[in-house]
Image (cartoon, rainbow, N blue to C red; front, top):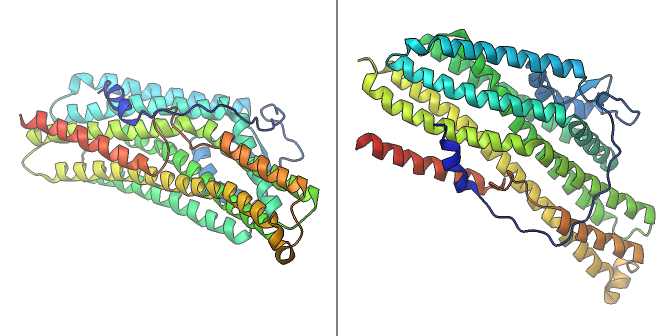
Length: 416
């Protein structure tokens, strides 16, 4: 099964077009980890939307940032050290447990132990990626929230919008916890597996789901900000105030910067989650086929294990679909920006309509519109998994295609 990632990667490979030129987005001053500045204040409404996700991350000592007294800052070195140490100790206990049970692998126990080995490898890689994102990308995680907060304040986003995100995020957290609690309860009831380490290891994997929910939330919020920016841009298109147009351009730059930071901090986690979903799904199919030959006369255990395994796969694919739908909606909103600029320039620049719509565009207005178009064309592109795939609505179809193709191949080997 170690070869599975190498076999699957070509199915996601996508060539990317190189850009002839690139507009460099204005750099943000470097801030040292843990430093709190006066402009690091996060509004309570935004904090409420972040709280459900941050709560689960703090439960496993892998939070992306720290918010205290309405100030956001990077995690301290002590916090990162404690979290990394706890993760290493826990994985060491899991490794000791796996090694100590190798000699006892017989029948169904050996197959379930293969599942444990697969989980140990992938979960260990996942935790390394988590702490890489939280420690190495500590400043970027904070800058992302600050960029979003700046745009939220400037556009005066309605409190109802933030309340919607609060409710949605809590629903995701409750649903994910229910899935893990129910699945582990059924495992215990039917004695499919009975070791506490297995259940604890399974529950810690919820952090990988939280990463996908977090990325989906940020994309959904970015889409809302883009829509509000477009509405503001269209409603005040006749303004001749240069400060206003400069502010609108700066807001658009902040949105692009926030999206760029999201790609930097989340792309690796999305790649890991996608590969893990496919590999673990195929591993489960292989184990289910083998279990049919050695399962006891009663089919209860096999049926329950099959149902719970497929429920895990459905949960992962569902989160992938949510992420891809949110990203596609954000892309669609971003694609409206150049069209709005062109429409505004044509409308305001037409002398025949001058009396109907007001004065012509000033040079500053035209310059800002063209700069926005140029910036969009050169700096905006879809989120990708390091060239392996593009995060859009086609990704779930590619995942389904890979799962179907390899499942059919596995069935052919099993029946031959």
